[in-house]
Image (cartoon, rainbow over all chains, first blue to last red; front, side, top):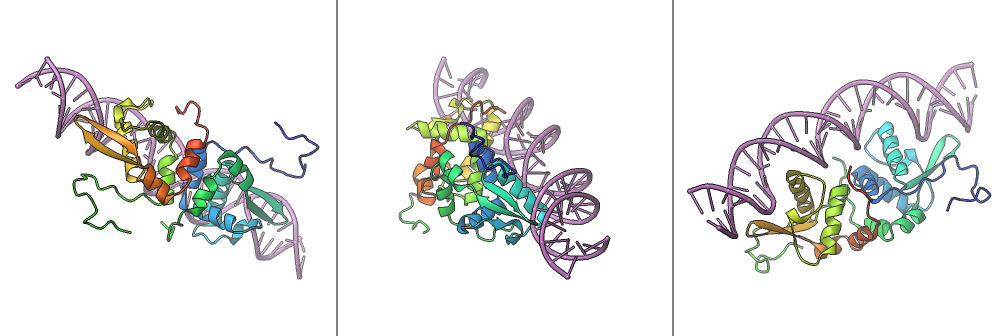
Length: 115
Length: 115
DNA sequence: ACTCTGGTACGATCCACATCGAACAATACC
DNA sequence: GGTATTGTTCGATGTGGATCGTACCAGAGT
């Protein structure tokens, strides 16, 4: 079940942790800001740098949100020079919770997620 | 989208509130206890009395959880003599968030949801 | 070397919430 | 009437989390 060392690209600094349990996952996704981040990530095919998200929080708070998403197994981040590219772990999520991500993305976005 | 008054049965003491927004809904379902309640409700075809749930909390806390679920639009409750029968608003949920409920119920239950 | 730029880490603050016990309300039963 | 039974409501409490500012760190560019 563990990834054979020969197949695991050694340069991944952060071995993707398992996707979290369902309540942890829901908790991670229950925050409006994080939901917005999820949508942004889902709507872009390429990994996105943390700084290029338009959310009304400071960068430290943003960093916190990314940590929560990462620890819940929702996203993956790899360093690229001075910035960090974030991408959705769509495949893993679909494997663990089939249909969940799709149904969330299909849901109408929260208008004015600021409050 | 609002229900025409002529079609809305006036005798419903609790006019089923609209299902909440996605983050509120996720927040409501993120709690392990409430997820357990959801599963119990989903697995029984008939409405269930509040007291007959086997969760490790006092009845006041249980009442609180039911209130959260009710206000999020997840459940519906109607009085029956001395007890209150709770049922899942499966249809409304499926209408608002297609696939969400199914994917949640398909997810593996959190083992020992007690803590 | 210095200086941006992008991001993390740490402390502090504030607020929401899960929990409890106790008091209360309403129905059923004797 | 009284007494269970079933739930709700109301403090009070503790904990977790969302937020911020500041300090810090690592690359990239000059």
